Amino acid sequence: MIYSIMSVNSALRSSTNSGRVIVLIMLFILINCSNDNTGSTDVFRVAVIRYQHETCTFCPGGDTDVEDWTRIRPPLEGNEVLEADSYIRGFVKQAREYENMMLLGITSPSNVYGGSSRSWNTQESFEHFMGLILDDLRSKMPVDGVYLALHGALAVRNVPRPEAEIARRVRELVGEEVSIVGTFDLHGNEDEEFLRWANGAFVTKRYPHYDAFIQGERAATYLRLVMQGDYVPTTATRKPSIITATVLQWTGQSPSMDIMERARRWESREDDTYVSVFYGYPWSDVPDVGTTVHVMTNSDQALADRIADDMADFIWRVREDFAHGDFPMPDEAVRRTREAVAADAIPVVLGDYSDRPGDATWILQRLIDQGLSRVLYATLRDEKALDALTERNAGPGDSFSMEVGGFTGPQAGEPVRITGTVRYFGPQGSYEHVAAIEYGEDNMLILTPAYTQITSPDQLRFGPINPDDYDIFVVKSRVHFRRGFDETGYAKTILVVDAPGPWVGTMRLETLDYRYAPIDRLYPFGTITSNAQE
Image 1 (cartoon, one colour):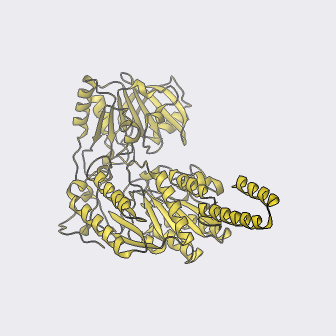
Image 2: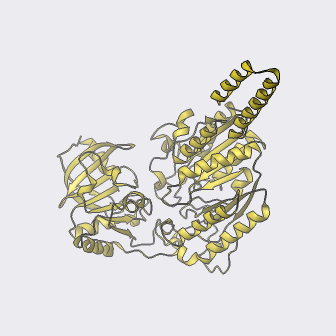
Image 3: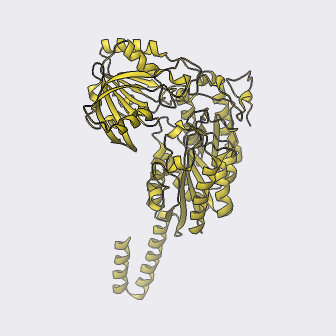
C-alpha cells in the first residue's frame, strides 16, 4: 500500500490536469480497497477476561477460596491475561491479524491449586474476583466488545449458573450495544442462560482439547463480525436429557466422535453457522448439568432451530453407548499389563480414570503384588509425605520408607508402604517440592502435593528421570493422557482402569448424592422415555 501511494504521488507530479484527476480517482480506489481488507476503519476496543475452573463439587478437597486461587500466583493483569492459555492465545493471534481490534487484558484469576480435585468455590471467592474483574473493566471503559475465556463447569455455592452470572454482570456494566462472546471447554454445564446475556459461545470439539486455540480464533472472527454489524446473532439452545461420565466422552471413539462430526458437517453445509456441543461435567452438582447444544446463525431463527433439533435428536439416539462403558478393574488391568510386557507391546499406559483426589492406591498395590518392574507411577498425591521429607531436609540418595496415599476415604484404597531411595526432591512445574522415589526392581514413584494429570511423557523429563527407561506408566487421567501417550504413537498398549467401588469419579453416577441437579430427568437415571429438552 505504501508503494502504491508513492507511485501515485509521483504520477501526480508528472501528470497533466486531466491526468491528475484520473490519478486521484486511482488513489481513492486504493484507499478504499485497503479499508476493505480489514472490513472497517474503526478500531474496536475489546476487553479480555479469564475465569476458569472445572469444579468437582463431590470431591473431598474442601471448598475453594481466594487463597486456593492465589497460592500458585496472584491474579493475572494486563498483558499477562493475553497469554494465559490456548483459548486466549488463539483469540489474540486472530484479533491482531485484523489490525482494528485493540485488546485490553482485564485483571483475572489465574489457576486453582489442585485443579479440579477441589470442591465447591465459595461465594466469597466468586464475589472477590468478580469485584476485581468489574473494577478493572470499568476503568478501561468504553469498550466495543468483551471476550470471556471460561470453562463452563465452574460451580459456586449459592450461584446456580456462574458463567451466565459472569456474562450478566459484564452485560450490566458495558450495556446492550457491546458485543460479548465466550469460549468453553466441552465439559461445561450450560443452558440457554449464557446466551441470554452474551452474543455467542464457542466450545471445543475435541477431547483432548486440541482445538482450544482454534476456538479462540473463531471467537475473535465472530466477535469482529458482530461488532461491525455484519452478523446478527440468532441462537437456539437444546438440552438433550443425558448425563455421562467424562471417561466416555473421548472424541477418538464413537459415539462421541460422531456427535462432533455431525456438528462440523452442519457448519460446513450452512454458511455463517456455528454449532457447539457441551458434554457436561457430571461431578458438578448444578441445575444445568449434562449435555447442551448451542447453535448460532446470522439472523436465521428457523435454521438455528432446525440444526439444534437435529443435533439433540441425534445425541438422544446414541445415548446408550454414550452413557455406558466397560473398563477392567485393577487386578485384571495389571494381569493384562503383564501379558503386554511379555509380548513386547510396550510402553503400557494405565489410566487411573476415576481418581480425582489423586491419592488412590488400587493400581499401585496390584503392581507391587504382582511384582511388575520398570514402572513409572506419575503421580501419587501425598503432601504429608512431602512435608516429612522437607522436615528432614531430604536429598538424592537418602533412604525412604513410608506409607503413601490412600488417605482421602474409601475411594482411595489403603496406604501403601514404599521402601526405596530418594532420587529427586525439589521443585517441578508449579510445585515447590515433588519427590521421585525409586523402589523395587527399577520402579519410580512420583509424589506431588496435589492431584496432577500427566498428559505427555515430556512432563516426566526432570532431574534424573527419563520416561523412555520405563515399560509401564500409571497416570491419573481419563482422556487427556491420550494427547502425549496414545495419539502420538508413544505407547503400544493403553488400558483405562476402573476402580472397585461406586465412588466419585467412576461411571457409577447413580451413587452420587445429587441435590441440585435434575437427575430424575436425565438418562440413564430413572426411567427416561423421551428426549425431554428444556
